[in-house]
Image (spheres, rainbow over the protein chains, first blue to last red):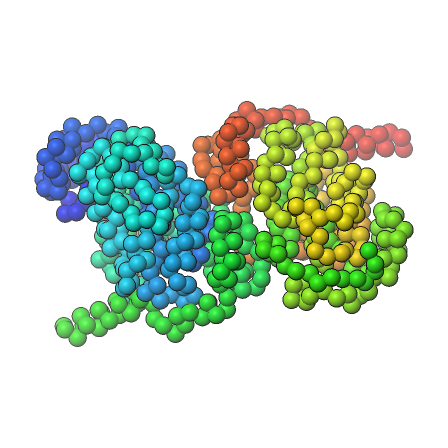
Length: 335
Length: 304
């Protein structure tokens, strides 16, 4: 395994098992411990030193995307990610978060965020652990994925440090998320069944398409990709036999942090992309059983998708491309 | 019903597109009731017409012969020749003796839960209630108690009468490519049965785009002859959700959420239906069609 350097902002709990199990090996253990200790309160430092290796890291799965519309495939990602992480024995998935992108993303065919949020909420209405967060969708400007991860990780850290015993309360959809509140009441969404022992870690849940989009010019900043895989982690659901492993091999950044990239085989494959759903709707074809019933009814009731809706943002440059190209120009003109 | 009559067909919420939805059971257990257009009857073969007519009442035969080829239907809703009015799921009986097959009543209940909110697809239990295994062609054949043989004008909650059918609805077998290709498994099907199915009824076969279904039809004389009765439907939004994979996932403690309807998933979980034990049911037992066809072949050869 590649030696991992201690970095500021790297949460200690994800390293706990490696630190203790690896002993004083190539890590520069003392340096690592010092860096980590500076992040925490004293009582948590004591927990670090005496931590039982059999303790699991609580994980929150965050999925970013257009969800235009949300489909059963998106929902499956969460189920597969949870099964996989729980089966490793090192993690315990406590929550799933769907974070629809804001309208400022300017993607072709992207319909207004409030519809996409409502559909995601309808899709997760009967889920005990997956919910929708609207913070990203409410921002006026497009928000880089790494910032969304950071936003959610900070909320979890704030919540946990005040009262390490509780998990954040979960309100019903539509109400303001009260991440930082520490109450012992069991919510209908997630009754208190256990006491988490550290700050839950947010990890990015995605499909192979997102992973491979890392190589699209100007779509991602290299610093962002690095932070995502170094500080947070990726859980990537891919069809068995896909090129994801090769893609990781061919990228120095991904290779370096490959232990933070979990590739999950999807053996029960499905091809239910939002693009195909929109295409079927334009052609008057049934999307029943490809999206949750409530979502299908909502789409039909509001006639959300058509040739017109598909033409939204035509000719407009995608927000990340615009931003990254502009920054690159600016940087080169400064040089 | 009067020949050629039609009422404006209104499209109700939820009754979206009236296309057969892909349901792929192991045995051909899903039927779509469609209406054969006069033009579809192969005039070169009198046999199919006779077979169909023998199934019908006299007045309905008259309707079949005199059906107006230019019948008015709303072309934006029904641009083609058929109007799908019902979908039927017919779970196989326990006597099929397939490995891993759990009792029929559970399978029927799950199918009913799955179609609870469907306006047009429903479950028929006749086949599952038979003590002996029933050949597929016999399931297609209308009998006295079969739902689609009924010509009642009452609107049911499941399917309110919005139009008057002008002929006897035709039953067609809905299946996946696996069933079509199972025709070549030795002793699984009687050649007479396959012939009757494609000649008298028709097949609607949902296949992944680019599959070998067309080649399979080409390589079979029977299927080739009645190819106009075999409709291959491209499935562009593919999914690999087989029951085998679902049972495997359950044995391994993996989630099947969003692969089956929520009510089905809850029912399975509540009754702990699938396990290594359930998968061992009928192990070492020969499948009913194989047993029956092999026995008949032996009998026939000993008589020769």
